[in-house]
Image 1 (spheres, one colour):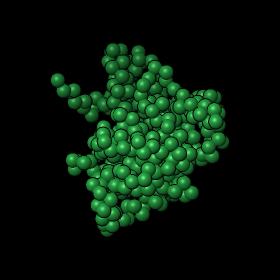
Image 2 (cartoon, one colour; image 1 turned 60 degrees about the horizontal axis):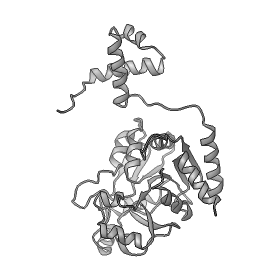
Image 3 (cartoon, rainbow, N blue to C red; image 1 turned 180 degrees about the horizontal axis):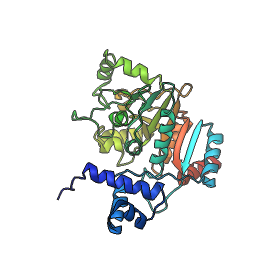
Image 4 (tube, rainbow, N blue to C red; image 1 turned 180 degrees about the vertical axis):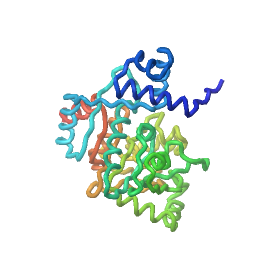
Length: 321
């Protein structure tokens, strides 16, 4: 049975109840009295406010261990920014915590009155981050996709988030109407030469900040699961030493691009220069660890949002060498 539609007036009531509970500090009995409803209805309204994303919880108390790990990572790897969030030992989510932190970091950049160009990659973590982004109007900014947004079957790539973020922030958006991976190197060059594509590629190179996901290349690699490469291509990349992909391109454990194979056909823009842009990877977990190491070693990024456990593992790898 389909989920019943929630009316605007019911959402309004839920928002009011959520504000009274989380912001004004009212008890559920007090909310019931103020809204003229039963305590049970007040409880349901507060729960609805949370489940519909009307309430966003932020932890304001600085966690000393997270701050210390962030400082160590910045110093050890020469990164411009690092955010480390607490690890939930009972969760297997690859987005919990880091998606919220990424949304906060995006908001900080978007609050700039001076115009900026924000480059955006693709993937599950970025999609989760943008879902947590509070609406903000900033028409002075431009948002440019760093990846193609067309799947092999011609449909829009599900985890391409350029339209999601543009809708949230009411800024001009510049999608890349290209396949994620072209059928041949010649096709890629032909597509990149098109008059409507060149300006997008040029704009991506001017990004002031970029937010990227890091894809692993295990058996359930996003590139493979989402249909952009075949299993044979995935195995060929691994045999060539690839440990991760960023904006569709495969890199080895030192952050060096794999020669040939699918890299010759990737239609994405190149990662913006770390000399002129803050390039932030959002990733956590054991599967992402080789890719994070590669991105740091290859100077592909100069910013990182991760969690405690991954940060500790990164520093542990360094200390063993």
